[in-house]
Amino acid sequence: MSAPCCWCIVPAAGRGTRFGGEVPKQYLMLAGKPLLLHTLERLARSSVVAGFVLALARDDLHWPGLAEIDGVPIRTAIGGDTRADSVLAGLRALTDVAADDFVLIHDAARPCVRGEDVARLVVLGMPAGGALVAAPVRDTLKRADAAGRVERTQPRDALWRALTPQMFRCGELAAALEAAARAGIAVTDEAMAMERMGFRPLLVEGAEDNLKVTTPADLALAQFLLAR
Ligand code: CTP
Ligand code: MG
Image (cartoon, rainbow, N blue to C red; front, side):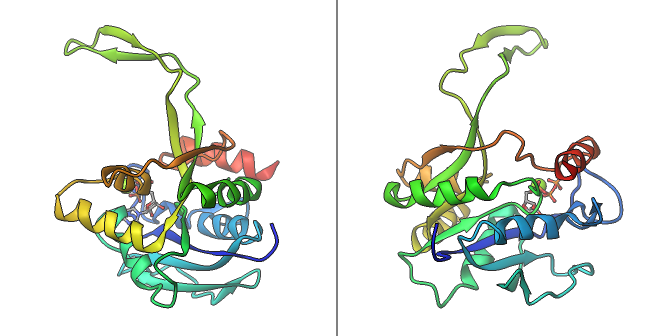
């Protein structure tokens, strides 16, 4: 990849309810620095990020107020009640970016993202009109009945786990997220909002260890992965 090309929205306004504890998980210390800084450094070093918009909780007390990281500028926006609201707030802070320009979205809670996956997403996703990093499902999947017994085994051949980053055109993504909000549909990633509009995002295979820190066990695993 040559010149940096995309702004990257990083939703970091969550409360970490499933993780628990006083400090929101994006600010927990991991191998010597806050989880969120690992995430931003890894994205900055991918060389494809032109700038960050960090969506922060209104009452965030932990963000150190950095203006840039490794030379990549950082803006902030006030996030919303859901992840999708926070991403929309980030998009609205990009008034100087053209509607046709692509924007990356990456969860603050995924500190193990690899620069080469971000770069590949950009290269493959632009001609496809939008894409997401994903990993094929490896486990055998069971569908449960109401009694908690296996009803059947679900074929996994065509199933993927949706990860981030994801990349879409700014204007199309904003319209898709607004439409989902109007319809009262809770979209759990950007691709889902785009799919509702009839778009078919490209799946770009990425490293399976790009985990989202959701529970304390995930944090221990992320610590191990980052220390390697
Ligand atoms: N996020 C956000 N705004 C929200 C909710 C989530 O910006 N209103 C962000 C989180 O900070 C995180 C990412 O979206 O980086 C993925 O969300 P998730 O892992 O669910 O984090 P939390 O919502 O904080 O955790 P929980 O669902 O356990 O409360
Ligand atoms: Mg959440």
